[in-house]
Image (cartoon, rainbow, N blue to C red; front, side):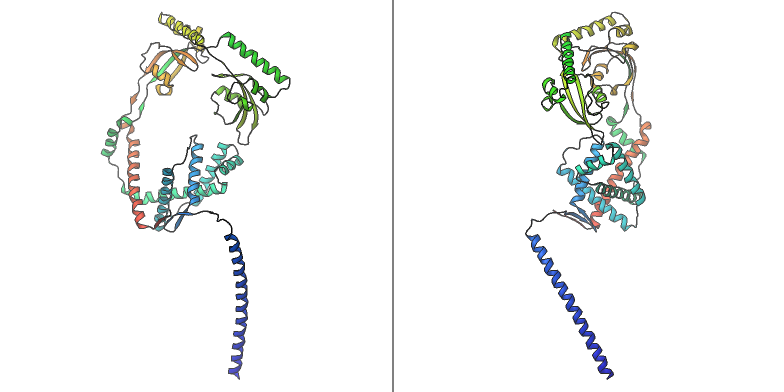
Length: 455
């Protein structure tokens, strides 16, 4: 009986298991049927590529999105630095992928050596970088819009920057442990580098103390009066309530006249003339400037709107000031007269005070100050490079007008000696040797770790 009771209990247990199994099978069948229905429906749609693997390094993968974010970060950094990133070439993409692969190899080597990075320091650096971008673009919202234009959210950017800074920390750890101990910079190596690159060694340029006389090329009285008359007509029309856009179409001689004088959206420093820049960023929305004179003509600016990033949308009415050959000849004759007076023995300071139109120097007898030769414009460098102290130069024509210069003093520059550059050169040589040793080390990592680049 006991044996049979035991068997009965066992049979009942088995019977209960079969019922539960049957129930699970039924649920699974329903689930598979639903999955098949979904898959069938999806199969009728075009497949959408969400992302793809471009490379596998050890246990780490590199996605297409990683490469794209690298490209967008490059573009953003270039624009932040005020540079034009241009088009991203296939060679540049190849370099970016190689850098990502090398970073993964470095991380694999660091982890194998039980190295760890400071995550808190990384997060703090990312926060600082984001704050710098906020200050650059004006507001956090402006930064987010700029990131979206690049196909990134703020979270994407933060993740990418975290990854970059983590890679950099791992690189420093690996270099410190495996690379730098192998590099020893000898004195003769530093000296040889100096001698082999003498032409590229920095030098202190000549500094010049100069005075000037400026005679601008002025348009004729008839042209000036015509501009004044036109500005008065425009002001009268605006006083009667005529739209700025219609007046721009009627009066403006700029390339944007047909669009109602629309210049577009600008940031500080975008306009070619600092007077225009100053006037544009002093206006309030809807306000129209007083006539602004630039090297090209007269401008009436209207501020259309101010973006959250501080950039400004502008319209203008542009009236060019046309200069004739007669105007040019008249200015040339005046600068020649000024120069001849000085060569005849009159004091340069007296002639400059009487004839120069340079607002910066005419009240000081023409004295401009002392400048490094290389800080001067290419036109000024050319005329002053070989000038001797006390010499009055030939007239030189610039967009501002005709100049003559008096070279008052010259402090001769010199090439820096080996001793002056020694420590800087040591660092340069060391960096080159570390770079070469690191390249060899990474080459060895390519043999040690699995790499699979996808086509």
